[in-house]
Each structure stands twice: as C-alpha cells, then as structure tokens.
Length: 511
Ligand code: 0RQ
Image (cartoon, rainbow, N blue to C red; front, side, top):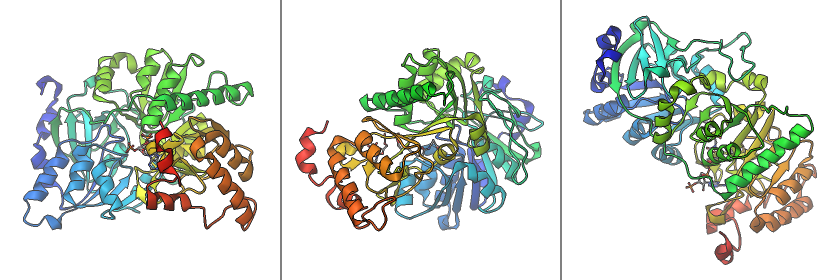
C-alpha cells in the first residue's frame, strides 16, 4: 500500500482479514456494504469461511446476511457455499445463492428495498452484530468515506456494536465527495428536502464513534460485475417505443420539454435501453434518479447528454470502473451517491417526478407484472427497488422482450404465475413489438392492447383464444378469466418444455 495514504488512525487499526474473521461471533448477523454488486467487502468473508472450514464444529456457525442489494462472489458466493447461511435480506443475483434459495435451503426475504431499514431498525429482523463496510478513507474522528455504493452502509454503521472496515485502495481518495449521506428519521420524520436530482442535504461521509471501529484491513480489488450483453435489436426497438411515448406525453403537456428524470432498473435490457436513448438525437439532456448506474451511463456522457445522475450504486464492468476513476475529476460534478433509504424513498421519488423503466419476466393480459419468479416458484433475483419506483412514479413503464429462451416462454401470458407489480401501478407496457398504454383503460380494453401491441406474433392467436374463452367461462365480466385455463401455459411449459403447443413445429422459424 502507499503508506502516505494511510493516516495514523488507520495504521493503528490495521489487522489481517484472518484476525478480523476471528473476532466475529459464531452466530453472526452481518450488515455489509454492497449494492448490485458495487462496493461490497471482498476479503473478510473469505477469511471467515476458512475459519468455519477449519473449525471442529462447523455446524455451530450460522450467518444472517444483510446488504443493500446483490453482491459479488467474494461475499454472497463464498458464504452461500459454506451451507451456513440461514437468512439473506434483501436482493441477490448470485447463482450459488439462488440455487440454495430455490432448493429451499435458506430463508430469503425478498422485500421492497425502501422497507429494509425500518425492519432492521425496529428489530423485526435479528439485530446486527457486526458491520463490515468497504471504504476509501477513515479519519481519526470517525468520518467514513464509502466507495461505489451507499446502499445500507450508513444504517449498518449506526446500528452495529462492532465496525470492521475494508479499506479498498483501488479507489482514489478523490472518490471522497461523491456521497451525500442523510438518513431519514423512522417514525415522525420531517420531510426530506430533495426537489431536484442534484440537491445535497447531507454529508460526504458517514459519522461514527471511532471507538466502535475495531479493525481495518487493506484491499485492492475491483468489484466483480459480470458485464453486460451488447444491446440487441429488441432493445433498440423497446428504446424507440419509450422515446415515442415520451414525445407523445410532451405533446400533450404531461411531461415538460426539458423531460423528467429517469429511473432504470437492473440487467441487460435496462442497460441496453439507456444506451439506445443516448444514441437518439431527439433528447439532448438527461437526468437520472435511480438505484443502479451501469456502463450505459458512458454512452450518455459521450453523447454529451448526461446532465446529472443520482444513484445508490455505481455498477461498472472493470473497463467502466477504470474509466470512471480516470475521469473522476470531471464526473464528480455529475454524480451523487445516496443511501438506499433516500434513493428508494417513496417521498423522494414522488417529489422529483420520475419516468421509471423496469423489466418484467412476464406480464399478464391485464397488466400484472412478475419480475421475480420463474413458473411462480423459482426465485430469479428479487423485487429490489422496482416496486418502490413503479408505485411512486410519475410515469411507470415496464419493458420486456416478448419471448424468452428462443420462444419457449412467452412474456405475455393469460395470468402471471406470481405478482410483483399489479395492474394498479403499471401504466405502460413495452416489448419490441409495441407499446400498450394502460392508463384509463378498463381491464378488457387493456387486454386487447397488450395482446395486439406487445405479444409476440407466435403467441398472439393463443392469447386471443384465451381472452375469448375467458369471457365465455368467467364468473364475472370485469376481468374475465377461465380459471381452469389461466395457468395452463405454465403447466404446459413444465410438462413439455414450451408454453407453445406446437413449439416443435415452430422451432425452425424462430430467429
Ligand atoms: O436468462 O441469461 O439464462 O438466458 O431471465 O433475462 O432478458 O437478459 O433480462 O438481465 O434485464 O433481467 C427481470 C431478471 C431481467 C431483472 C430481470 C430469463 C432470460 C435470461 C435474464 P439467461 P434478460 P435482464 C433495479 C430494479 C427485478 C428487480 C428490478 C430483475 C434471464 O430485470 O431482476 O427490476 N428485475 N430491480 O432468458 C423465464 C421468463 C423469462 C425468463 C426472461 N418469462 N421466464 N425466464 N427470462 N424472461 C435494481 C435493484 O432493485 C437492485
């Protein structure tokens, strides 16, 4: 390490990862930094796992893990593989962890991110023993400067008895100043004074009692973000429909010409759509208030369109991370990292007025959205913040390619097998095929739009047939369903491998 970077306080607290891991209780409730996997601890969890493996009684260990959102292999992966993880809150995307969840081997609580803090503060979840937080600097008077995510770090630092720090020297000290740390009060909180994406109301550091800092270990590693698929044809088409919709809203005076800030969700589709918006000349100046910034932000920067981005995490590929560091001096006037309690706060989302863009796994003909469960039972990632943003949006958009897995799945189904976002919150649905504007539409009017505008042609006739049959067989005619058939597509997929009855015949004609 560059010795000059370390102040006397840090030097006095230096420990090895192994020594820190020795201090953890065997029954551990850990509050860790990290959000989609940005800014999570990278060496102490591995050392704790070695301690478990070397122990005579590994079964004595049990771990409850709280973070902001998903983290990398060095935290979620290594802990999952011990088999000692008992409780995971609140969003994940690691394949080993997902495997355990879907085998029923651990309690995963998939909840709105804006609710996590209240559940922990009020003791609804087990209380935190240790906070393990990645930082880029600490001062002797207890000011802690975070790295690529704000997430839940400030809350865990406030609640834990013992604080351990991973000081990641890959981050230049210039990262200091990106964060705006402010925690709302739980019960009778005052209004949160954020009207615009660039309003600052807090401090660039988290303040703690320095005596609670029990040890610091040095690290030097990038976040392990998997990177993203290149935007494909479907993403371009989805992005184009979004832009058309926004222009339509501007024309009718519902969205100002200067636009409203965007929130965009996690994953390939969201990343690609933002990249496409950057490449379109119809919009000149974009603001974001979101929870995850991905590599596509560089497309906005390069096309000189990013006015400002407020987020709780910077989730970059290694190339993206290097570029961010290199140009940090210029970028600092364009970014704020906020605690998840602020980025996802319904009050703030409403106040700013957002165009939200999240991704569905499947949507039914009445506009209910499933973002989390494959075949109603198998967890993908989690709801994350998509509900916080959708429910409180100025305009809420859901997007999805119309088919998945080469057409074996239709993203548009008679009835969703799990509901994350219901028809009351979902306003606009977009696939590469087209756009269904569900506002002011009755369920039956909306169903026609979804079938005719969004569904893939290979599934359109099947949906039309279902909708007709539903009206014949339904108990009521407001939201007609044939309850015997409503989930038959999912059953067929489980039994035959495809939702389409003639999939084998169609296989050759699907791109
Ligand atoms: O699987 O890679 O094995 O082929 O799902 O699909 O199309 O690459 O989409 O990466 O954008 O993720 C909803 C999961 C989409 C994500 C979801 C399969 C598909 C592929 C991924 P393969 P794509 P994306 C902000 C807001 C909920 C949380 C959220 C998500 C894989 O966006 O987790 O939005 N959202 N939070 O083949 C079965 C279907 C499918 C399907 C796609 N109908 N059935 N599998 N797939 N559709 C962030 C936070 O809150 C932290």
